[in-house]
Length: 83
Image (cartoon, rainbow, N blue to C red):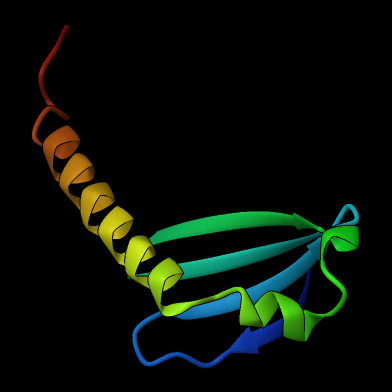
């Protein structure tokens, strides 16, 4: 996997990687990350990929990050419970 671009953002770490004829758009917040895989032939350029990152998409990512943190905190409470 090869890093090809970092996209500045005030809250997230956003990177674009290239792997197996796909772009991997990684959006990270703290210890959590979301990855979107986009075929190289599905976009015409990196600029087009960057334009797909609308405020709505990033807002939805924040909602998922909050849910991921909640899920992890609930799971973490059960780490020492034997089944």
